[in-house]
Image (cartoon, rainbow, N blue to C red; front, side, top):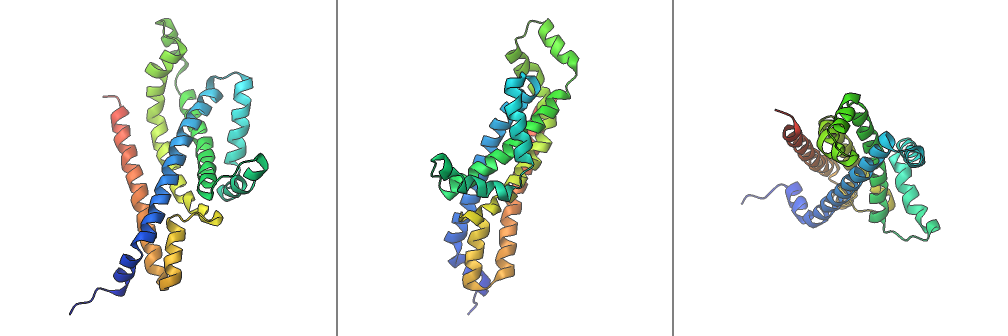
Length: 220
């Protein structure tokens, strides 16, 4: 009678642990990227068009966070929160760290894309009577988006990979879940390769999404 290889049996036995870790990685990555994109877009607009009282805090935030290793940022969000009378769970603290890191990079991406738009586009929008909000929506952001998307995809994939650092504060994401299974089965190579495959699939999906969006926003 045929018997399945032992690794497949162990994989089946560990399916709930790995599925929970995979779901945690997806959840923290999606929340960090979505929140970081929103924060970074606001930061990019402030850095490009804001007056100095608004621009200064975003400049300090962007420079400070981008210059801080994600590992340190995760530890800071988790261990410094009680000093602010906050009691986040490890998942909340880790996701907040990734969100802040993502937002700092997106802010620079948006700023660079907006500043690359010729000055004449701003003047033309004013000449036809568009308000600042209307010119952003109808003229500036559609052009900037085509430059933003490729770099945004890279930033998003980096966030997915950085989610493995949440294990240092006890978040059972995909890597830590795989390590827990490895500790029980001693199948180190097999489960690390399997975890790597799952990370690849997540980032491949992000890349395909980015290409789809690029085609949608490209002018005919």
